[in-house]
Amino acid sequence: MATAPAEKRFAPVIILLLVAALVAVIGLWATDKAGRQGSAHQGEALATSDEVFEWKLVTTWPKNFPGLGSAAENLARMVDEMSNGRLRIRVYGGGEIVPALGVFDAVSQGVADAGHGAAYYWKGKVPSSVFFTAVPFGLNAQETFGWLHYGGGLELWEEAYAPHNLVPMGGGSTGVQMGGWFNKEINSIADLQGLKMRIPGLAGEVFTAAGGTSVTLPGSELYTSLQTGVIDALEWVGPYNDRIFGFHQVARYYYYPGWHEPGSVLEFIVNRDSLAALPADLQAIVRYAARASSQDMLDEYTGRNNESLRELIEEHGVELRRFPDDVLRALWQGTREALDKLVANDPMAARVYASYAEFYKGVRNYHHISEQSYINLRDVVLEDEDF
Image 1: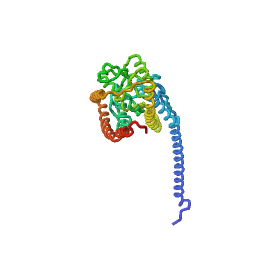
Image 2: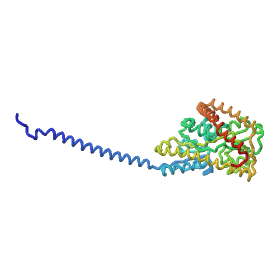
Image 3: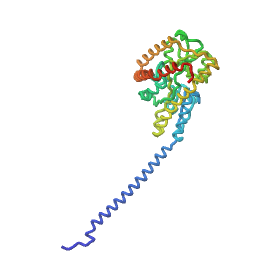
Image 4: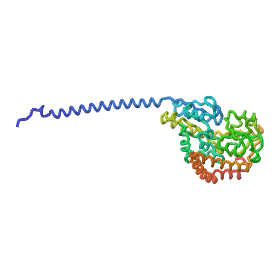
């Protein structure tokens, strides 16, 4: 049989090689295009991460007020430093943009991106909010933060605020507060009859049930209100802040313990849409900065209160008084009744109370043999000696 010419015998192989080469060229082109598109997308992501966000934060306190006002300023500074200037928060004091007690609505409606205040101010809007500031005879600051961060309290807080487009976070603590300023001695529960006192939250309901009249006023109005007789007594925070406000100039007796606020926790609230608009890393920075500035406030009060109390007593002649035990027992009974009423009328409050009460029982049991036992031991061993 005759042999085919060489060009005919190798033609199929040549065609296959040409096709393979074409496929390789197309593949290289596609890879290069994908790489260039990927680089472009990475560039876009980098540009997005470099975007600068600006927030407004409103507070219920005077601008730059020591203690209470420091948390918002610290948050703004920490966020700016950790984000390298990508999130800038401008802080406004009470009354600069919105009224001091208008913070909740302002942040909920997006007038401001964030706020700093106390949850129990909003108990008319969110009845369960009182648990996230202070419950009379309840958890102290250390215990409350334990409940929030490791006992399910924060998740319940977020759920309670979700319908208002708000994300809550712990915003500091004053520790155990003082019982308040009075111009007459309180020797029995009868001495509270007809007394008008600035005392908010669940404690205000207890005070009213005991025969007094509770009034909720912002800090900026307290001195004048007590001086002019609009109110007969007030509680604010403790020696550090109370001395700065000058309450010793318009009241004679300074009572303790702070049965009404054993561990007052403040709050940061953030507009949910404002938070969601941030890149993930900035959202994390906001949360971590809130927690850090929260602890810093408690540290500040722990460091400042004693010297301020000494000054009030030794330099200004303030008379320190302890509430009688029978008065405190009567106030506890009023607290028990107020709690029962609260949880009966609000399902969310009932759920929060169940969580709070369970944690309270456990931490109280442990603190009997730890914190409380140690403090009692220290008093017995050292007595009046210096360390």
